[in-house]
Image (cartoon, rainbow, N blue to C red; front, side):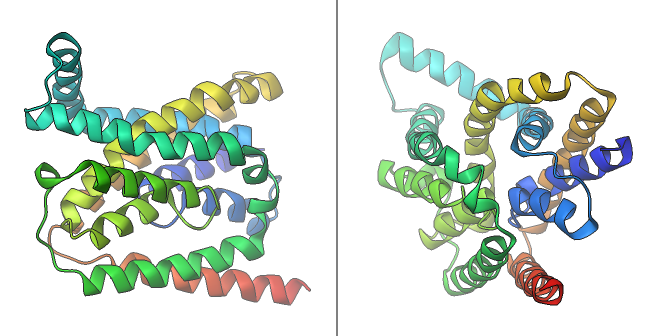
Length: 267
């Protein structure tokens, strides 16, 4: 892998992690479509360190408030304050994804990375995202969340283990289906990404170092991922205040059809 390829993959990871278009799909498809050597899942996970930095920095004030709320829960055992309840909801939402990731890790590293599966998942999830976003009105905010809402949104992370589904796409779609407005759906999705990404980096990141060490390519990819990830969050949080998720759904369907066409052309 060249440094330019690593940077390109870092940019792809950062943008697609927080846009509802599936980072795992893009990281798998880019080498396939451009004829690059597949860096493997370990390198993909290493790039997630960059997006972890992005979400921590963008929501740094929110994380500071949540940290204080977590200490308050430990010391007082009370959950009345909105920030306290948000901490609990984030924990509830994280549990299903953590269990699913542990049980399905081997398939995520092999069968789920098939270009055919990715293309179909891009199309199907794109249609679902568009349909739910268009049909549901915008009424609820995070402050109105209940534990069952957090659990359902967390369960939707499990299917995102299939590249092409998209973690942010599945969680945002579920939140929209539960009638949360677009901005709050995106914010909760991004906040709940932190523990999942952090766990993946801790568990899988060392594999990248064992395979290649701390190379210039790896460092370049992580930096590119962090910068583009911050940019993607900024774009989404501003864009969805006035627009629907339709443009992302359209992109997913077009990309999925294009991938199927390439697969057919290559025989």
